[in-house]
Image (tube, rainbow, N blue to C red):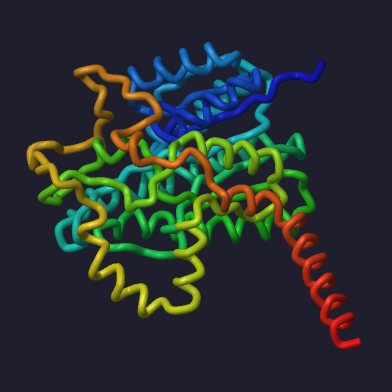
Length: 336
């Protein structure tokens, strides 16, 4: 019987990270859970254990490079190795750029971008000597296409994309079996839209269509199993956004200028006194564990055809080739 995988998930206390941790737990993996919120970490640990895995909750701020490295050391000391590292933690501010303070922009960048850099470095320091392992960067359609009200987050996701492409080339040059891949997500139903720091008049929401975090988790697990592919797209909206941005970026600018403000807000008024979780986790000191899901269960999709297509490029290519051959043969017969 093979040894269980050892996996690290950052941002594991809620949302996509929580769903990913639970999914790895269902495989019987050792799952190290990195996040700030202690209540959420405790809940995530219970999820992993209930699913059949072995949890190791570690309170850590991913913007602290030395703390991330120490956490990685703790994982190896406990489980003896490191197979998969999933970078997922993020923070953000929802506001026009001119209403985001320098410290807020810096904090978003440190968590959402540099947190990935620090996590990747900690993982590589343990994986390269063993010449094996996979790093999965949880990305977004916004890694390619910026939208209004999310300049700090979009900038960080763009940075992750460039960083990952550079690193991928370096690993290939090195000839190592360590791999890095990226999963580009659509809007996901997570508690973060109730936690994010916002200066909007109305409550925040992800841009529809919205998908459940379990859809993202399935994509992350597949990517971890097949890290030779450079990236995976989840959701038809992700594919449509990326294609539209390639074909007509200026037109998309104008479309988002008209629709991007309203589509990210709900009818309910936002409490301006709510400071969100940018600098402190929301479950401190009050204590709250909201799990993987946000407030949008009634609107969220449980499947993604685009994810299936992203996982089956070879089959689609063969099918397309067969259809083209059949069409050519049929045309030849008609001509005869």
